Length: 183
Image 1 (cartoon, rainbow, N blue to C red):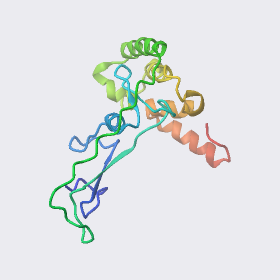
Image 2: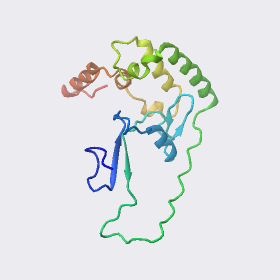
Image 3: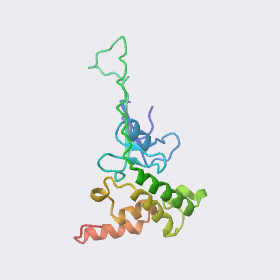
Image 4: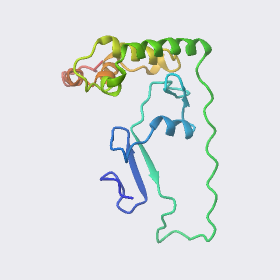
């Protein structure tokens, strides 16, 4: 099907973007990461944990290929082949101590978050929020140590991720354009 301008007009692939909120285009990036064998999915924190990068990675798009599409070069088969089995799932990468910390941090994050405005608070569409909201969600992410030393996002990147405050981007862009390295 043609889902938008990100798709191949020949119908051989389709792109789903993480930022697309059209209900007919929504896709769970966490679920894709889990079933593809890329990451472990933690049911409590709702984070995907990569074996190297931990929680310090992000997913932007999923590309689906139409394997039934034939081209002039393809040889048609009369009996379709069975798809290969899915890759093995990544085993739990979270220690018992981290699990305890995650439960406490999740409880705190939920207690400071207005659940009626949950997604709006986390994506910055609610007017100025209390720092305790984004700090609580950052603390939840910080409970998982895997990858944190090497790959943790800068404070500015974390703050932007949880507030979507354009002033943070402007500050970082100005720093880069003035010969700085950003934060």
